[in-house]
Image 1 (cartoon, helix red, strand yellow):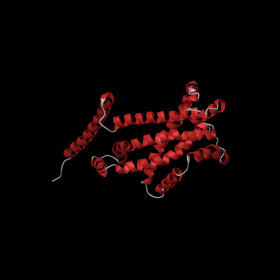
Image 2: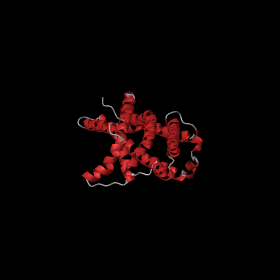
Image 3: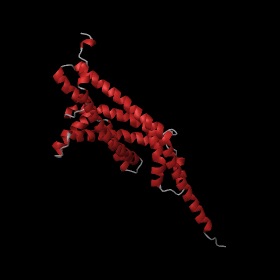
Image 4: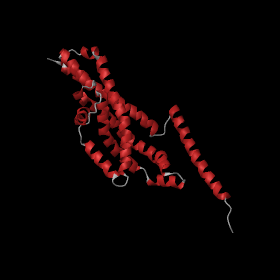
Amino acid sequence: MSIGDYDWSLIWDNRDALLGGLWTAAAVAVIALLISVVCGLLLAVLRSAPKPFNWIALVYINIFRGVPALVSVIWVYFGLALLLGVRFSVFQAGVIALSLLYSAFFAEIFRSALEAVSPGHREAGWALGMKSSQIFFSVTLPQALKIALPNIGSMFIGMVKDTSTFTVIGLLEVVRVTQNLVATTFQPFVLYTAAALIYVLAAFAIDLIFRLIEGTYVRPPLGGVGRMLRRRQNKRIDTIVERVNAGSIATSTVPTLH
């Protein structure tokens, strides 16, 4: 039997179901991405905190970097219900499982990105009279995000693919939809090939989106978005200069005692 003998029209006939599975996988991954980025940043900050906070972050990171996605979602969906009586929906369990796992990976990404920012930039902020929180959010964090952005895109591709393991709890993502279709059509080669192509195309799309974001955010941006970002940057610079000048004027007007 050759490849041409298979019924490839099944892919087109079931396109709505397959794309619906991709939509579910993307929704779980996007929500988990937002949660895990925030949690990962907090864990990265805790890694630099005094003891015992840095120990707590280190233990969390080492545990969840070693837990497979399949085990994580089983524990969230079944384990918490058995131990604590907390029952989540399939969608919620998928989001929580991905967030727990990828928070640990993002913590290491942000830790290395924060350490890559030159200490001189923070010192310049202190010299301008900025508070530590202002320096972190206005100086350190934007530069760290530029460094971390390519790795965040790669992690997001992995998050979309890891949703395929959530078939064990019945999440209707691409693989689960494919399994249901195979049970009725008995064409596993055709349908699993379609599932693989969907994941590959999704990876290309995600990579393109993050490259566009990186091109706008990391390199000197062009076009309307670039002009908007430059205006915002110039406003921040003007505000800092005004504060410095105001401080200089106030200092110069203080009478000296002879």
